Image 1 (cartoon, rainbow, N blue to C red):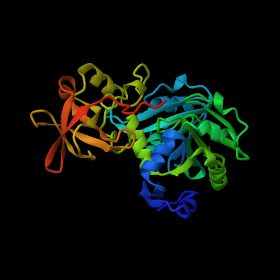
Image 2: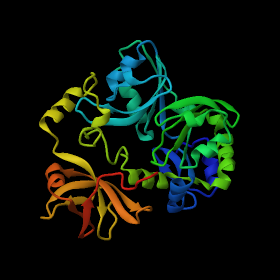
Image 3: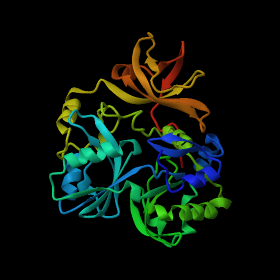
Amino acid sequence: MKKTALTNIHISLGAKMAEFAGYEMPIQYSGIQDEHFAVRENAGLFDVSHMGEFLVEGPQALDLIQKVTSNDASKLIPGKAQYSAFINENGGIIDDLIVYCLSESKFLLVVNASNIEKDFNWIQSHNTFDTNLKNISDEISLLALQGPKAVEILKKITDFDIESIKFYHFGIGKVAGFEDVIISGTGYTGSGGFELYFKPDYAPAIWESLMKAGGEMGLKPAGLGARDTLRLEMGYCLYGNDIDDTTNPLEAGLGWITKTQKDFIGKEIILKAKEEGINRKLSGFVMTERGIPRKGYDILNENKEIVGKVTSGTQSPSLKEAIGLGYIDKKTIDSESDIFIAIRNKNVRAKITKPPFVKVN
C-alpha cells in the first residue's frame, strides 16, 4: 500500500487505518460520529493526499480541457475552480473532477484516487493539442479543513486574506510559513472550509500547525468514514458508487455540469438522452422504518416490483435516521414518494427525498 506524507502521524494518533484506492488511509480516529459532529459544529481536518493531480500547460491547454470535460472551462479565469466530469464515447462518466485555472495556459485537474491512471491515460490519448500533460499526484499533499470554524482556524497561520476566497475560488499564499500553498474554497462536506494543496515535505508541519491553531476551537482529525457520512447527508456523488463509466450525467443529476453548447467527447449521446428522456434517475431517500440501506440492495415499488438499486447508504448522524441514494425508475419517482428497500429478507419502507438531507448553515 502507498502511504501519504502523514501516514505515521495518523498511526501515532491511534487512527484505524485501512486500504483505500491503493493507499493506507485513516478511516476514523475518535469515532465516525464524533468526527462528523466536529465538522458540522466546529471543524475537522482530513488528509486526502491520495487524490490525483494533473498539470495541463501550454498554448492550447484550454482546448484540451474543453474537449475532455463536460463543463465549460472557457468561463474560468485565474483564481477560479469548476466542478466537471470526463465523459466517454458512450456518454458514461469516466470520473468527476475539479478544474483549477492557474493562468490562461495552465490548469490543475484534481481527480479521484482510484482513477488516476485511467484518467491520465484517457486524457493523454486525446491530447492532439500543443499542450503538455503531467501527472504530479506524488508531488502534492492535500488537506481538507472543513467546518464553520475553518476560517477562524486558518487565519491564525496565514496572512492571506482567506475571507476573500469565495466558494469554488482559490488563492495562492503562505500557510504556516510555507510559500505557494493553494488555498481553495472547496470541500466535500457541505459545512464550508478549505482544501490546501502543497509539497509533501510541508505536510507534517502544516498538519501540526492547523491542529494547534484549532485545538481550543474543537478541531479534530477526521477520517474517510466521517467524510462519507458528511457527503451523503449532502447528496454528493461518490465515484464507483453513485456514478461510473456506465452512468449518463443526466441520470446522475449532473446536467448542470454538462454544457452541450460546446463540443466535448460524448456530447452526441448526452443530446440524444436529453431529446428522448432518461429512464432512471439518481434519487435520495430516507428510511421510514428501521434498517440501513447498503450499496447493491434492490429498491421496490408498492407492488414489490424491483425498480432500482441502492448506490450509497448510511445512518445519518445528524438526522438519526438512515438515508441513501439510488437509481430508481423514472415512472416510480414521478408517481410515488414511498418505496421499499430489500434489506436481507425484509422489504423496509422508505420515502423518496430530494437531497440535501441536512440543511447546513
